[in-house]
Image (tube, chains in turn blue, brown):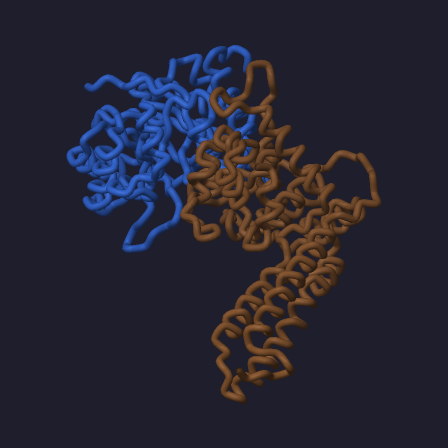
Length: 274
Length: 316
């Protein structure tokens, strides 16, 4: 078992906000969407950040590890090459599938929480791990539906996955909030069930509630309820890293800095959000 | 020797030469006096937009607004040379016009934004009218009329010379020197007729130079801003020196990518004249070095072409 690196507080690097990310105070690490980058043509901004010693973590969205088809080795190879080009301490993707029968869903689809689906997921994760030069962390997704006949809660499912693959966990507290709001899951049960000692880092993101459904847009401010969940997690464990994701409708630098400050405040004193 | 119109060739050439000198001097005087008229003695300080217009016309106004909006956080720059809105509002018609243009695109390329907004009335017509009212800018109509007047003696002379040339060719007289003089006259007429990019009045020129000295004086070429002093705002620096003077070097590279721009046949480029931003522009504008002073005026302002020689380098 490899030691999990201390990452600190970071933000998702996107080309639209490259200079902002470079200039925000106290950005300890950044995450990049792996599919948007080529290992041999890294953006100047990332070279600047790496030059300063800021860790850059590739985050994939297309491995489709929960899919019934074998994992696409080219996609894994791309992620591996990117990890090496960025000298990343770990990489990540989601517990989901994004394609089936040759069709792409365009969404991170939840995996049925059955023993059979877990077997398939475990096989795909192991296949990916075998090709990756660094540890793989897997993230809980925001689901708008729950497959019928689930045998495990999401927390139990992830705990089994970690047990069988030794993968790391990337916990998205905004997704936890989304699932609590949309499909009535229990975030506290989730946090109790998962092996928190295998937590690599945490995602925090903004969203918006529309007609009674919470949308994990990454294009709106972070809701207080999501920070409450971060505080709940922080009371149980000191996470190695927490990362703010913002993918669209970018606010001013000052607003992004304030969101990072709010995250730091929760980490420093989770009791403030009781 | 052949005599047409009662003059030998050399006699005509001598007369033509004298007339050319007189026409040129009178034209230059008319051109210079165009800037002099000063009835309005208002001492109201220049607004940032007016200062930018005086320094480099609508293009410079757009650049200064861009710098202000980036500094205030209303626009975000990226390394791709684009800007995007952040939701922070802007005040004033100029900044609002620039922000409105940027907000029509997810990511707006800086060069396209500048090229588009220079035609907005808030950056061009409205500011020019205000400056004309304050006697800081010569009205476009006045410029046209004065330049026409300035060039008239040269054109009359050219007409006479052309007739003499036709006559000379017709009678088989040598016309080599006359041809040369006619070409010189034509070139001088074109130069005298050329419109200054920003037709500042003398008062406008003085105010611009004072603003330039004030801004440059607050920054030392070697030590930057002296301790205890507030650094000048990016919008003001860009207003007088162009985007090449944006204080932050990384943002400067994004907003004003260095590209070679030839000026009067010299190989001086924008990048070399203003590479250190305001630190370099200490020598850029205030200094005694006339070459760096004149090259500074090329920075960022594409409107600073052949016509701006006299006015633009005035700080040096």
